[in-house]
Length: 413
Image (cartoon, rainbow, N blue to C red; front, side, top):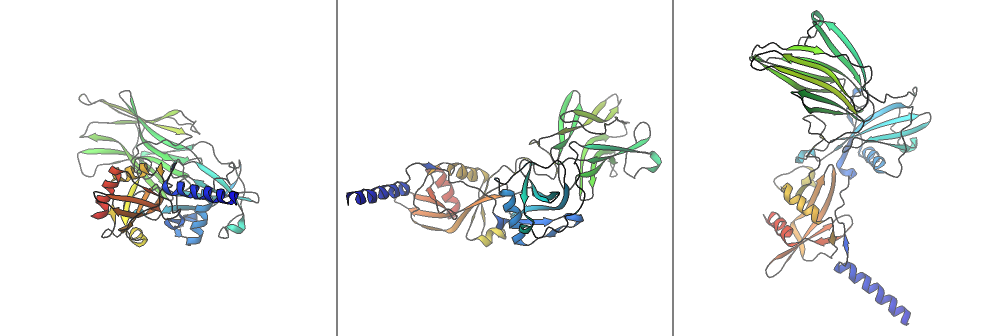
């Protein structure tokens, strides 16, 4: 009987410690949830949405970090997909997760490119679990491991309308094949100063494209020189020089290797102007790096600050958030959203007290990962306590004074 009483007392103490929150735990657990991601099949030049069940399986496979192997040395490429965060219309940008099925012999894989690091992971799969994979035949091949370049030159008479001829009256177009990893950089050098002006991470959707130089005037007393990247499913460009007035600018293309070596800067073209008032010597170079670095680019790929920010939304139900109904959706400031997120990284677990707030839910979102909490309010004599309860795990905690006060203002507005 004493043993039984001791066991009951022990269980009671453990329950009491959990409910009163002895010890700290990380309550912030942002995750990519299938309901908020949608897959697009862009094989063979088409962009077709796929059923929700298929999207969920693709996301689930990519999230399985225990089922990851090395990329095979030879393989054939099959269908390609993009997984898109479905809440883009609330004002947060999340770059897609790229997916591609590959096969080596009779072994099939789903390769996933992280939208954060752009690194590839290979997940072996069973055909039965991915029945939509139809096209599986073909010859295994060894993919390129560094960008390959094929230079095509044309005389001035056969150039495209906007293309630029160099000092030898030749026009150059460069066919580029990118490997499955890394990034291609454009580096500008002027007056001894170097700056990365554009970064192009490896992608399944533009593994091959054409690089060319074009110029526009738009009827203005100036000329803009622009590098254009053009592929079957991709188009981007970067202005590299604006020439004011009629000062002459001479362009020289540099010889390019057949393959760009890793981590070496290779000159591509040079602009020169001997104008006495504003002389210019500017060189644009290409550089291949095997890792994608976080650089401030002005392009499509979403690398940069917005992908790092945590956004917070107060809403009465899921529909309001999904449909971005801003009549009932309240956006927290980035500062407050970060304060709440930081608070939830290490908290004392407690049973929520009081009643659910009228707004009911708080959702935190970062890079396509999210977490939703029930909001509880408990009014006291001189203040109101604010509790957040994870709707999935049912774990909860009370926010500290300043963070609680700041969030309460938003909840009660």
